[in-house]
Image 1 (tube, rainbow, N blue to C red):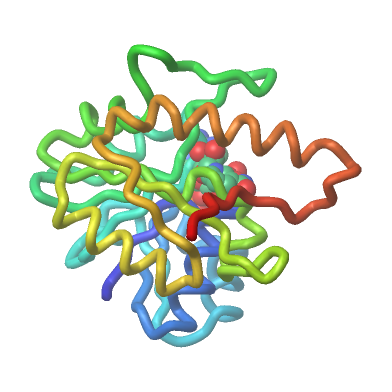
Image 2 (image 1 turned 60 degrees about the vertical axis):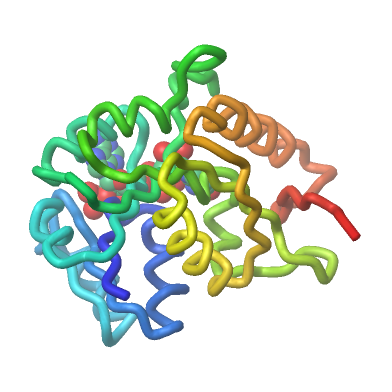
Amino acid sequence: MRIAVIGSGSVGTGLTKSWSKLGHSIAIGSRSPGSGRIVGLVTEIGSGIEAATVAESAVGADIIVLAVPWSAAEVSIEALGDLTNRIIIDATNPFVKGLNLEIGHTDSGGEQVAKWATGAHVVKALNIVDARLLDGKKLNNREITIPICGNDPEAKKIVANLITELGFDVIDAGKLEVSRLLEPLCLLMVKLSMKKTLGNEIGFRVLRD
Ligand SMILES: NC(=O)c1ccc[n+]([C@@H]2O[C@H](COP(=O)([O-])OP(=O)(O)OC[C@H]3O[C@@H](n4cnc5c(N)ncnc54)[C@H](OP(=O)(O)O)[C@@H]3O)[C@@H](O)[C@H]2O)c1
């Protein structure tokens, strides 16, 4: 698949490395695709990768991944242009200063992204996994669970396959509105990961028979 990854930070780099190893072609959508840092990143990761402006990266992409800080989500979506019928993975969390959620209870970042990205099929996913584990690392011999949600069943199926390929355990949590629950769950994970006793590598797993 051709995947546009918007943002070249921890999440963008982690996903780019892992999906490119699986043979997907990645365009990193960056504010500065010609910078030394991004050119170095593309060289380091190797074939199947290119860097482009945010708008160019999405041209011909099957999937667009939003991996930018919440404060940059709206402007990044605007830069992507017409998103009608495009599939967007929203990996962001609407965090604001002091590790708080900007939106919650009656709205969510995922739903807000869908409002900004008019006509797109938004799937909330990958927002509750530490970027350092995006190679699908197993914890205690078990895959980390990645809950996803969205309103378009076909888009969710495509996204679920891409995330399963990474080595995760995907659960369809329902409609996009479930982002209201998935975003606070990330906050819990961040707070737990700050407890030194738990170590750096933690993730959630839904146990079942
Ligand atoms: N870190 C995690 O473990 C983790 C896990 C799950 C979800 N998330 C969520 O995923 C999103 C990205 O997290 P991250 O840790 O990858 O962030 P990050 O390391 O800070 O990287 C974000 C990237 O977004 C791009 N960007 C665009 N506009 C920006 C702006 N105004 N200010 C700063 N960067 C801007 C930058 O790439 P260019 O310079 O190339 O444009 C930057 O490298 C966040 O919403 C976060 O909550 C993070």
